[in-house]
Length: 139
Image 1 (spheres, rainbow, N blue to C red):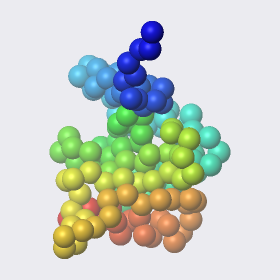
Image 2 (cartoon, helix red, strand yellow):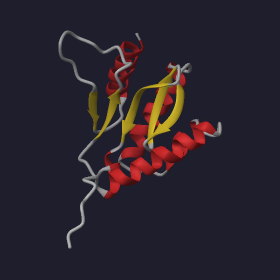
Image 3 (cartoon, rainbow, N blue to C red):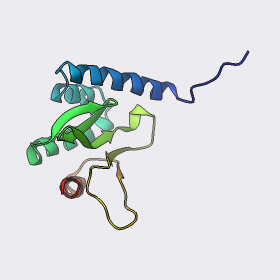
């Protein structure tokens, strides 16, 4: 007899469980930068330098943002709301990771605009572009 599938991959189910655990840690007052640093440390050699570069940038240039994990991703929030996150490639076995912006980000540009940007490597040019995006997103 066939069983009904939830339609979610094993990775997606794991991400949902991870989110529930994050919410519990948040409610207990235990969530924060240590979780982000642990998530970054656990990444592979492709994703880790990108996440480290992004985290260093945020820490240096945007110290008012709160670091936390969100579905296991390093994420950065203002006033309790996620503004952006780094979805690393290995999480869902994709070709590239990306920085994704939530709807609170002020990237609006007419009737259509991008909310995610692929990042293949972290370098000075990428850092400059990401810095500009974050500034725009924060208004």
